[in-house]
Length: 247
Image (cartoon, rainbow, N blue to C red; front, top):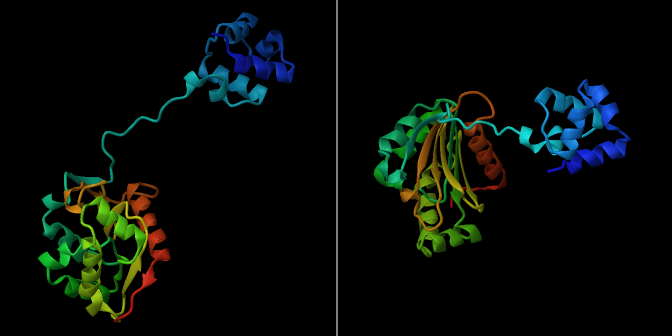
């Protein structure tokens, strides 16, 4: 099949077969085959020809485009759980207890933490007293996105009630130095529980309650990885969230 893109690029620049062949140091017959038979030159030759013509090499020869090989396992992936219900609450608690700089929680409600571990507020106070910055973002029960999530999970207005319950659980932390609670109205694609360079990310699946959806445990290893993607997402939501004061 002829390479019409190459033919057009040569015509636009006034390049003959002989002139281009001379420039990239190949036989004229090779250039003719590139154009008329759709042959693909070697990568180095193709890159030189594309540079000469002022074109993108992959636009001229798409076959040279190499897919980035997928990694079998991300170096940041510590563990993958089929569903949140499979994770012992001690995993969450131990991770938070080890934090020295950052604790970030982005959820709609996640009242299971307080229900199963009643000392959660005490733990957060202890971490804050030790200099750890604690940020908790809870879903705004009045937001359209929270209400829509209730419909999708078949919770109805139950999820709104759970958001209010979560705020009641965190209310005793109002005014505690180093701890801030906010409400957000964003679409929650994932719940994020971050402690320094570790995070538990609970995926959200349409029609599935959060406890039945997968969770990946990440540990940061360098800049620009999966961990940083979720940490940046938390920061973006936090900027839109409304500070919640007592009462």
